[in-house]
Length: 154
Ligand code: INI
Image (cartoon, rainbow, N blue to C red; front, side):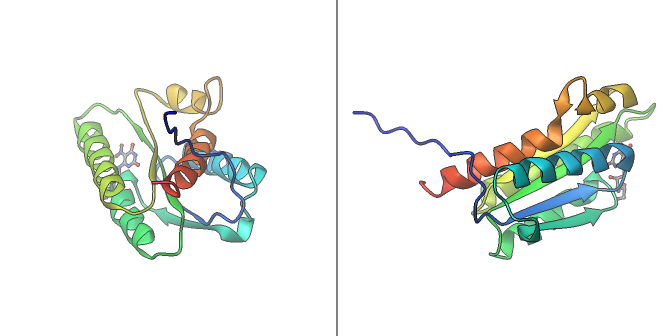
């Protein structure tokens, strides 16, 4: 019979790191609340969550890398919000942030979860931070638990 591996959605005993950006914190605070809510509903103890605030999404990858390397965590969740403006700045920040997080995810022993919103407008970001389209922070946290448990079997 084929062997299937799947991570259960259980947070009991899990230690989770979160890196969250202050830029657009009207939105990122909601993403963070969603992540806490999901983690604790799935059995993660509040005292087992470590949150690092960074100035902007550009600063997320280096901090996520250091948290992941400290050997004390089972997953790191990256939360940020990048909103398109009138210059190419958005593309540089969004590109560097996603590339950096992706690179760390490949190199780390623990899962690194991408919960950075890249939106064309504030309305789109609000939709994804606990209103019309759910809360991407909550979803990122659920992904972190599934991946942390999957990694135990790899
Ligand atoms: N950082 C964000 O997280 N979101 C943005 O929308 C954003 N914009 O638009 O500029 C942003 N810029 C700051 C950037 O992440 C760095 O903090 C800054 O460049 C210092 O390195």
